[in-house]
Image (cartoon, rainbow, N blue to C red; front, side):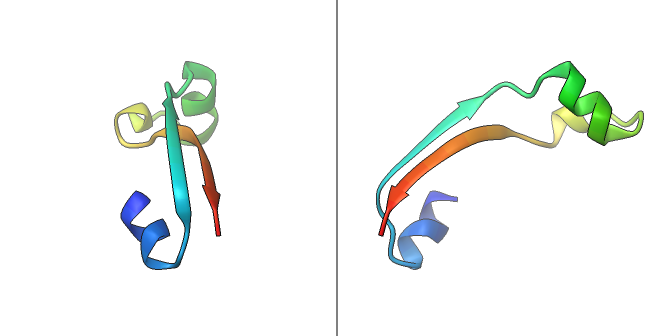
Length: 47
């Protein structure tokens, strides 16, 4: 993700990963083990 942001001109990139909650995974996973395949986080970058 960071490489993509750099390629389109962003600087001072901060990516803070967070754990995907069980509630979120259940809402979007429809019974699948989606928590193993998705991530969550905040991105702060300047252009």
